[in-house]
Structures are given as C-alpha cells and as structure tokens.
Amino acid sequence: MIRKILCLFIASFLLFALGCNAAGDNTGDNVPAEEPAASETPVVSDTPEAESEPAASTEPEEEPAEPQKPDVPVFNVETTTIEGETFHIPGFAKEHDLTVVNFWATWCGPCVGEMPGLQNLHARFEKGGDNASVAILGVCIDPENESDVKDVLGYTGAAYPNTVFTQDMFQYVDLMYIPATIFLDREGHIVGDPVVGAMDESMWLSEIESRLSTLGLSL
Figure 1 (cartoon, rainbow, N blue to C red):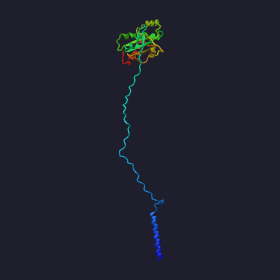
Figure 2 (tube, rainbow, N blue to C red; figure 1 turned 180 degrees about the vertical axis):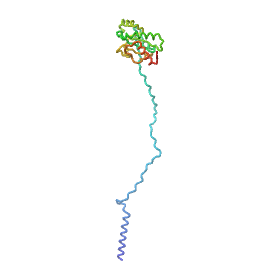
Figure 3 (tube, one colour; figure 1 turned 90 degrees about the vertical axis):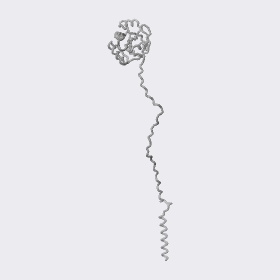
C-alpha cells in the first residue's frame, strides 16, 4: 500500500515538472521573436510622370541682326583747281557714274607719261555716247611749281580738270608711290582698291570697264 502511494506521488511530480518545461518561460533568452511586420510596398502609379520642360519665355525673341554693310569711305574733300577756283570733289563725282581720280607730280616721269592716254579717254567720255558717264580728274601734289605744272599740262594736252592736293586726302589714299589712282561712284564712295603705277590707254579703258562692272554698269 505504501509502495503504491509512493509511486503515485513520484508520477504526479514528474508530470508537473514536464508541464512547466513545455509551456516555457517567456522571460528567458529563448523568447520567440515577433514576426516581422509586413513591409510596406510603395504605391507605384500606373501613369508615368511627365518630363519637366522649361517654362516658355515671355520675352520676345530678338530678330537676327542684318549683316552690316562694309564701311566704304566717301572722298569728301574740297580743294581748288590749278587756276585757284573752289572745287568740291563729291559734287563733281555726283555728275558721273564713275570718276577716275589720278594723283600726279611734275617731277614724276611715269605720271607725265600716262597723261596723254588719260586725255584721250577724257575726250571720248566728254563726247558722250557710252552707256555710262565717266570723268577724269587730276590731282597735282606739287602745285607750288606753277610754271612746271603749266608746262606739263601743255605738253601732255591734259584738258581734263586738274586740282590741288590737300592734306585731307591722305586719309583716303596712300601716296607712298605715284602715280596713284582711285575711283569714285556718284555718291563719292571709293570703288575698289587704288591703282598704283602708270598704265597706257588700253589698260586704263579695261580698268574703267572693270570698275563699272562692280557697279552693275558698262560702257
């Protein structure tokens, strides 16, 4: 009888101990970890975001500037004739489509040598009959030698207008060498580059035709 009671006591004790271990102790190190919270999934819009564009400018667009025309100088010089009369070169040029301005000196052999050919062209242009009006104008750089000037004009027969050189002319033509010649249109603008050196009549005629061509004219 005592043996049965002892056995029952031992069995009850063992059942009580096993029941505590199964339940576990929530205060120990082996506490089951909490299941991680469901991660939040970012909401993605089905509509793609519009690409950003720069705001339209409210300022008016500037129109492209027109190309500037080259600055062509005007031979704006007033001088005197060999005889001492006032002579306004732009005013003279205004009367003709092309004015041939020839710089010369009494001591310059090539200058004097080409003057008869220039005189022949002057005689032709003075008669008219050409499609364009052309004039020959001489500019003497040593007018102080009055007797020499008159001798040269008489010798060459140059009857076209001849004027006196002034310091103002240096800004329009380089006179390191003479003869030197420039060409003017009706507004007094210089047409092309100067001609430096003497030419005969046929060469001058060809040069005049070339300068007229740049102005859209012809003889």
